[in-house]
Amino acid sequence: MASQQQPQQQPEQHQPSTEREKMLRGELYYAFKPELIEARARCKYACDRFNNAGEVSRRRQVELWRDIIDDRRPLPPPAATPEEELANFSDDPWIEGPLRIDYGTNVTVGPGVFINFNCIILDTCRVTIGANTLLGPNVSIFSATHPLDPAVRNGLRGPELGKEVHIGEDCWFGGNVTICPGVRIGRGVTIGAGSVVTKDVPAFHVAAGNPAKVIRRIETTMTETTEQEGS
Image (cartoon, rainbow, N blue to C red; front, side, top):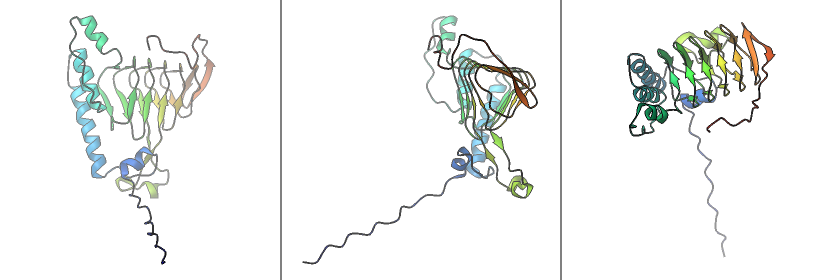
C-alpha cells in the first residue's frame, strides 16, 4: 500500500513592521509617513481644542483631555451637585493648558496627577506618569531622539527613534524640568526646578542640576509598595 504523502508546511509569512510598530519598539523608523503624519495631526487638533477652550467645566476639561489621549470611555452621567460632579472625575488628571503632545495615544497618566501649563510630551515611545505626581510649569518629557550620525539622521528624510519614559507615583517636578529619553524615575522623587534629567533616579530621592544628580534621600513613611489612599 502506498504511503500517504504529508503536505509540506508552508513557511510562515511575516508581515513587515509598520513605521508605528517600529517607533513603539524603539527602533529606527520614518516619522514622515502618512499614518504617523495623520496621527500627529489628530493629536495636534485635539491639543488645540483643549488649549483654546477657555473657561470650561471640569467635565468638559476631562472630555477634551480624553480626546487628546484617544480615551473613548463614556463620561459618567452628570451629578446633582458640584461636589459630586468633581468626584466623578477624581481619577482624571487636572491639566492647565496650554500643552502640546505628539501622539497622545502613547501617554498614560495615573489618578490624582496635576500638570501645570506649558507642558510638552513627545510620546514617540510610551510615557507613563504615576498617580499623585505633580508637574510644575514648562515641564518637558521627551521620549523622542535622533541618530547622532548626521549621515544617518539626514534631516526630514532620515529615520529617528525613541526610548520609553516612566515616572513613578507621588513625584514632584519643579518648573522647567526636562526629562530625556529612556529615563525611569522612581516613586516619591523630587526633581529641582530647571533640571535636565538624563539618567534614572531611584525612589525617594531628590535630584537637581544639569545634568541632574541625586542630592539626598527623602525620609518618608512611604515604601515603594505602599497602597495609595482610597485605591
